[in-house]
Length: 287
Length: 238
Image (cartoon, rainbow over all chains, first blue to last red):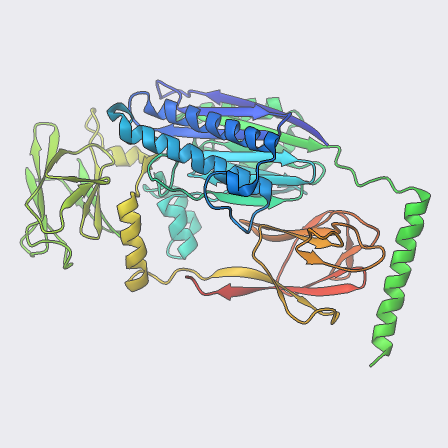
């Protein structure tokens, strides 16, 4: 499996500071985007802390192959071990940011969103808190791998708001979850099998406020180079006003080819198919 | 003009523009913002405009007035503050320096955090009583059509592996079965099945699948001689 990845962050045209932060690590296969909030420099600190804490705890647990009772918080039985590492690293980052915000007046109210993508041989994990998103392009379809934690998207999920009204709602930036504001947080975590040609995009709302899913699909499809794709996305956001910090990380997978079948394996597949056929026929004849 | 947005259970009840110098919040009808709820005192709190500032004062209410997650007796309101009165939330939207309504360009403005621990608690309680019924969640089920097993398998895991390997969630026998022959993942868009390896073929509705495909209700899945049907069931929201 070959991973090509790139990331870019841009302050935009309206803001003075950049509260976004990201990291990419191809060797570990970990990609993180965070969008901080909170006055003075608190937003910048929160996003940087979140990215670094998640990176550190996840790489440490991966390296030491930590047992699930040794990671932070109760393991989630619906997730694999690595999925739990991601979940726990987000919990840990949340707790540290939350306690810092309580201890220091200047950090009061600080918080951050987080979008995490981890790619390994045979497994992809996507996790998020807040409204930073993760997209996957596969077979010409763009799929969201993240869930927005905003009042608006919760209302859509409850069925009391139409998706089209959600895009224009004045409340669409009001988060229901972030890292830092509460003692406990539960991230959305999804796990699945990677496929050849998968393309992933992690981004802060600076991009998704201005570029819709349909346009993103076109842009991701059109570009072969992840670095150029990130640049194109940021340029597009700037062209449309660049009202917020914009961060884009793109990850392209290739070389996940189905194994080349030798003659023996082919014979095996032929037998397997024949036996299946015979078994089916037998079952039909039995009753 | 600055204004208050009254929210209950995440729904906007009404918006109150700040036209006068002071407004009062309470259960009694003569308040500017009357909230008919027993958790709210008769005269609960008031907000006074002093110059460019808005000062919130708790009128010694029984259950207290909270800003974000702190109980206050008096507080200078900032844009985006959540004033919690009983089970209701008042979102304060300030006028910015140029005199423009911040909310008019709120989608161009900062992300805010609405919920606090206390409020989430309140919302959770309230949800059970009066809130709109939550949209039922669905869970995927695999039922065996080949008679090899009687009970259905509920796909609660984010990633369910099917194969011969002992760490598979669904263990399948068969000489040519792959260690992990296929995986089913649960994602925001729904369930999808992916062929992962082994000599037996994966068929969905009779078609051989070499990659990944989304699962729809009542799709039939075949892995060698094993046959399943996929469907989704509503679960009772806890």
